[in-house]
Image (cartoon, rainbow, N blue to C red):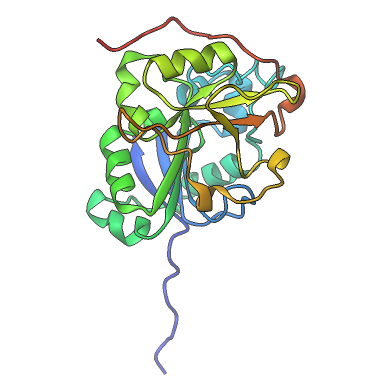
Length: 252
C-alpha cells in the first residue's frame, strides 16, 4: 500500500536575516487581545530572548527602547520573553522555519491580518518587506519607539509612534505620526485620543485583528484618532510615565 503520509505545513517562515537578527512570521496565534493574527518577530540570531535580556544583547532587536530595563531589573516591557519569543527562537534554531521569498507572500499573507513586531523593533524589517506584506494582507498593526529618528520616518505610513508621555505624543504628532500612548490609570486621555477598544479598561469589546486602528498614518491628511492604553503586562508594576528619551530628529 502507498503511504498516505503528508508533509505538515510550516508554522512559520523566515522573512529576513542578517548577521545578527532574524525576522520571522508565525502563522497562528492564541493571543486573546490580538486575535489570530500572523505575528512577526524580530529576534537576536545568536542568543535566546531570555539570555539576550540578561546580557544586554536585546539591544540588537530593541535598540534604546526605554522599557528594556537593566537586564530583568526595572523592566517595563509587556512582553514575557520566556514565553512566545523564546518558543519562536527555539523553533528557529531547530530549523523549523523555511525562508519565504516575496514572490510567495500571497500564499501566506492574503486575507490575513498581520502584527508587525510581536517582539522586537519593526523598523528592523526592511521597508520593502513591510510594504509588500501590507499591500497583500487584509490589515495590519505595528508600533515603533524609533519614530524620532530621521531614517525611519517612512515607517509612519504603517506603524504607530509608541509614546510614553504627553510630551512624546505631542512631538510625534508634530512629526507627522499617529501615536499609541501607554498611560497610568490616573492619567486622562489627551485631545484626539481614544482608549484602545481591545483593552481591559474598555471591556475588551473587540480584538486587534478586528480593529486594526493601529496601522500608521495612511496619508498626510489622515485624521483618525490616536490610541491610548493603561499600562499592562508583565512589566506594569515598574512603569512610570516617561519623557522623551532621544534627541529630536526630524526629516528635512
